[in-house]
Image (cartoon, rainbow, N blue to C red):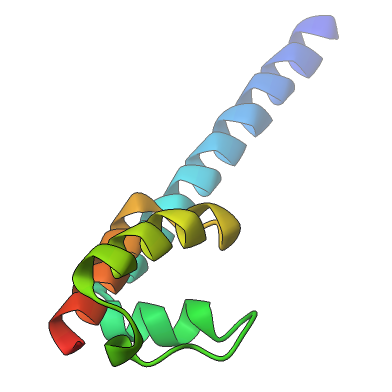
Length: 90
């Protein structure tokens, strides 16, 4: 009886890991497909009015991007795309 319970626990844990990995890869794929402009619009307006790309120069956007990566809990890829968009638009 103990062996059946152990086997069921292992199977359940394995299925959970597979489902979580599938969900994470789908989310990562969706983020990878988004442009910097889209990510900027989705992330920056969550907490405040997003500034115009012309409000800051390239160096300032790089610093702001690093700061906001931590504050907004965004990935390196998201931060990079957003900063590149802002630099290209200023």
